Image (cartoon, rainbow, N blue to C red; front, side, top):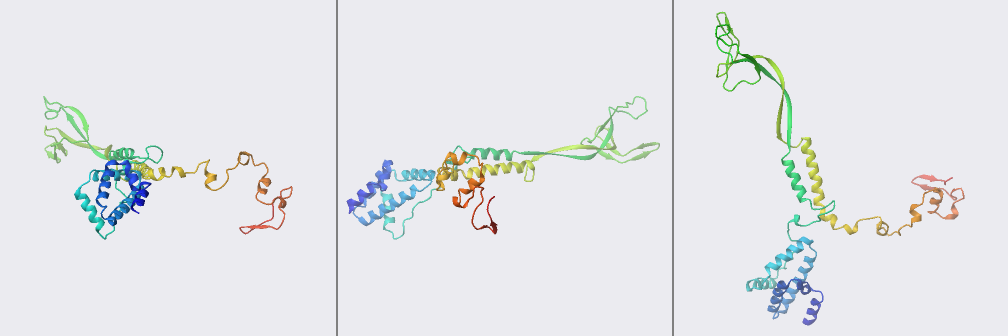
Length: 313
């Protein structure tokens, strides 16, 4: 029986699959040799290994490759400590758990061409564009207008005084102080601001100015919402890359749509000819003896969804 089991495994068991990985095969064979004295443990070892081989074969390609690479590292060389752990698990009454899925970086696999493909690079670039998206807002507000005399010196009207050049501004210099209106004899001083250099600024009215403000885009901004919708579409194509790539062979085409439905593909005469006589085409679905030359159907009327069909004339 022992030799029969070995021949069976060699003809398609897990030992045949291990031939692709010499170091792993050597380690597993070493542990099998150590278990030869206990056929029950050896049988349990082989059964578990065979089940794990089948579970590995059912893994997605990337997970299977990563799992095998990890196992090759773990079992690169036989060790007494590792064998002792394996033997302890085999002697235990607890069921040995198998690995059916192996976590891997999902970005490392998937098609790179086609509509549904790996779009990790495009997603990263799109997200960077969204993070750097700016919105410039403009608004109009009313501001006071101040008049002053540039280069003015001395009391007006006195000898040696300089009248200066009249200017206007909407901004008061930093450090200017407010001076209320005052009266000194026949001289009146209207309210205004006085700069650090003694220049007086008096309000002469107001005007509307346009103010621009640039900020980071956020939800609710048309540009931001549009970019997020584009990102969502890219993400959906990226998420479905493996679903559609694994079913390429099942897609319907003009060549396989009839066969997939169990229908014989129509001949060119059936598909390319124009429909010149509708009554003739309709006659193909009924018995020829029930159709007159003019296209009228003999026999009793047929009810189609509550409508009594009396024939075609």
